[in-house]
View 1 (tube, rainbow, N blue to C red):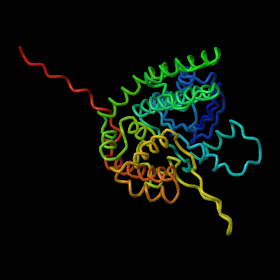
View 2: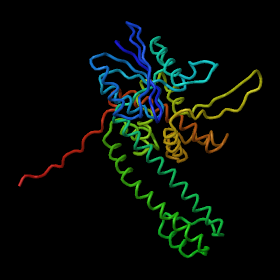
View 3: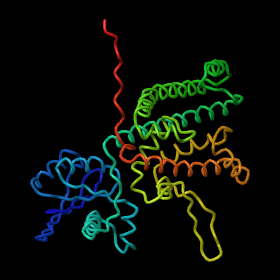
View 4: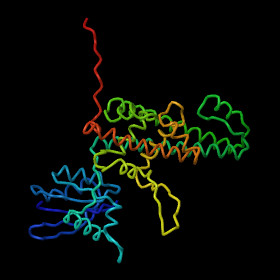
Length: 350
């Protein structure tokens, strides 16, 4: 490489450090504001030069990587947690320049803990499934506010606002004037979120029917549907980057961390170090193990009897994660292939 560089991305500016390995000439500076156009203009100074740039995989990395690759250079994405561990014990205040120095040093030494850069199609899918999960969480929050207000007003539990009968019952319950205003607002918010979810769910189902990886997941994993399959594919990504299925489980954050000192051992807890949407999708699918028709039903009953329902579902979720890893790995490049185009309808000749 004729030029190597490190970038530290923030919302207001991008701090950079570049180095010419042959001459040893070093340059530092800032790109402000942190946006596509200023970054594109800065990269123009390296036209005709082979460059390699590294940045941490924190918020904002996508447009930076896209612009680096658009300019014809190589982009490296550093894992934030692993990079921080390589920094060692902090002896002085951490600065943007220090972050650039560390990334550049690791890159030149061949010790950079790289993170996976998904292809554009998976990035788009990931954005869509995360948006859906955000809307679902907001819907749950508004539903909980509604239930809390009804309880505060002395309304008996059991009303289902998602059904016509539940709405009729809500219209007849005794509420204060302010309480009635609040309940009507909550219902409007729920209806609005339901309307926003419809086109997203439709797009995900169409994608899942036409994409090879999603089809394999829905066909071979009990409890995995179209929506959960898209979430698993988007967040698990290319399984070939994991050394084993255990690494895939660690990536999901479903692994149990245990701290032990001599004879005292603390209870294990989930690490939660990984995509929360992936954990959600695997847990949603794992709850289907409670059905008798599930191939994991016997295992679920064994763990549920020994511990409880949630722990049993978590155990099944780890099994599903391992199976998803093997299924996608066997597909190879087809696992992340673009979805098949819709088939044209045949029209009879007149």
